[in-house]
Image 1 (cartoon, rainbow, N blue to C red):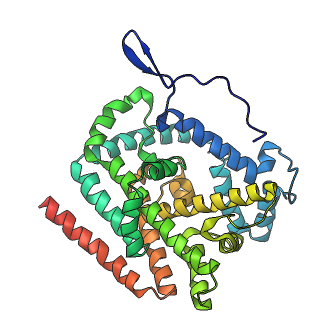
Image 2 (cartoon, rainbow, N blue to C red):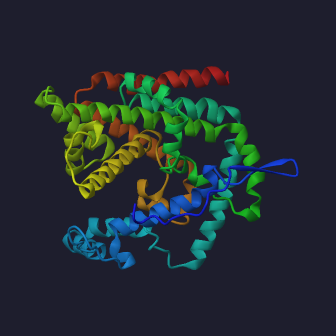
Image 3 (cartoon, rainbow, N blue to C red):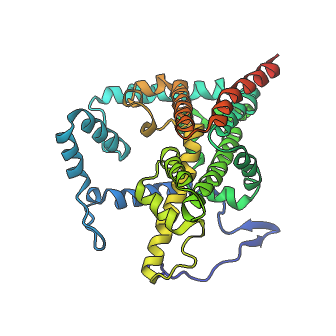
Length: 365
């Protein structure tokens, strides 16, 4: 790639110094996590909100400017327009509460609520029983049972798990209780938090939900891509991709054209090939992302009511945020299953939590 800079000679992976084996390169994801997620967010912002960085597009259609589009939306529908603008500004970091005192009080409350959460979730049954059981129940209600059991094989692959981690998947579930200030000895509270097994159980839930969601989506893409499927089946496949993974018509059309094999077998120029590959990768990442968000939930402001994301409301709704997200997901899955005649899945959605409830009760007793 012409944009990559050349590098100097690569050092050996390990060297031996005074009898000690020293690793020369940092290979753990945590070492570059903050940098990687920060750059990813900046690049996404540049692509979809170029006017914020004063970027002019050289190729492709002219961008109308996000500020202009948001203002036009406010003019057309003041009630909904202001809500959309508020959410976009908050997500981009452009929104701040005017009252500095409110921000300071909210920050202190957030620290206190995070400490409370880490101690309250420190009992072993919190993660390995309740969180794991309820998380799996959500996934079973989202995909086919064959996809669910197949995903357990997929997640055994270390490379598959690494690819999911690189999308920031593990930052969504417990992010709301992980931001304790260094001044308050976060490692001390982590000792209690580890006893509950919340983080590993949450990671397992999201690995399996993403893997099963990918398998589910691939089936629907095959139904659209190959001609031997009926029009009724293709209609359901298109609707499921849009309702479950929030793909738009253009994204569905692109997946229907290229299928799960990508650009293989298509004659494209080098530029077009790279462009299509990138668009397909973005769609695949969106599928993997919403597969776990629409089953395991998300507590970030983008997926919560506006009032619950204020500096004072956020720490006071710590556990309620995930409860709201889980309830919203259940209702969406019920509506989607009923819409496309998946009555067996409706039964699964109803029975799975009951089974998990008996399991948790038996363990507690």
